[in-house]
Length: 111
Ligand code: 5GP
Ligand code: ZN
Image 1 (tube, rainbow, N blue to C red):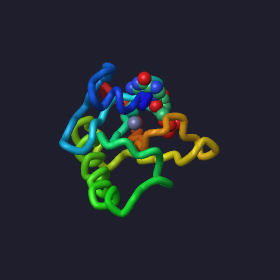
Image 2 (tube, protein in one colour):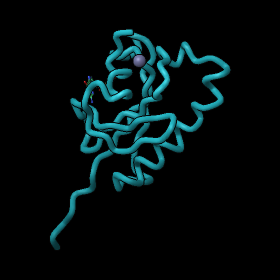
Image 3 (cartoon, rainbow, N blue to C red):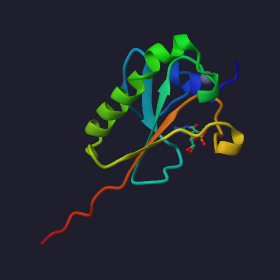
Image 4 (spheres, rainbow, N blue to C red):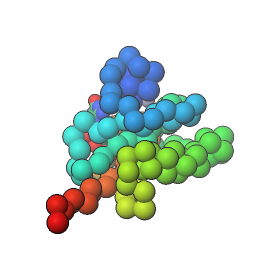
């Protein structure tokens, strides 16, 4: 299957990896739309949320734990957004289910 995110999760293509566990790879979005913009991507290919099976649902809850861990590692705990686009008309460009984690870093004042 010619899937960009499958190629990234199985390391055929490079990405800027934030963290990895047995089910997910978290890497930086190539065109960030916020100070922090990473993608949480299941290693198993699933086209979209519309294609989740009962079997998939057993492990996909862990996407939230992985997001939480990534946010902590990126220093944005308690200040981020999670988003999943579903289908072309829902804004999904890559047909491999993924969650966006977006956050703005607070400005650091010298005073
Ligand atoms: P979607 O619109 O499908 O929800 O999000 C796809 C995201 O993947 C976009 O934010 C886009 O910038 C990102 N993206 C597309 N191609 C690549 C790539 O080759 N590497 C990385 N790291 N991100 C990509
Ligand atoms: Zn895939």
